[in-house]
Image (cartoon, rainbow, N blue to C red; front, side, top):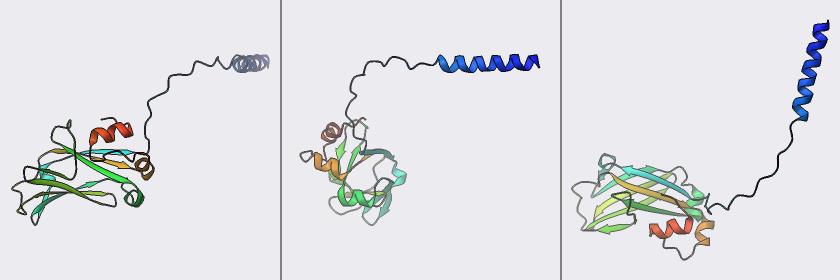
Length: 164
């Protein structure tokens, strides 16, 4: 019985000491303000291999799945699509160059890329391993930035505080 009393006293002393020694520390200095971001803007990056394109009539089509492309975004937001051959220099779609055109079509959860020739004939081959960025901008961010050229990646990146 004496051992039980000692064990109980030791346990009680340990619990009391543990709770009484816990003190809230001094509050530290407030840190610097972080960079302003935009949590509602979503960016998706993809590499589209030549094998991902399908020749349909006189155009090559490729489909990118983008779950954040909702009906609300289609109705009130903005979707900008950019392409790059080197993941450094981004061009907004639609894009025309050397008689070729790359455009896009939006639908729920999907961005369809379309590659054609401006003379109406079929391209001999699709783009190979091009990079694409899809930027989904909610209506509020679009309205808050009325002077942004949404086809200029540098402007979009600066206005929405995007990181590469």
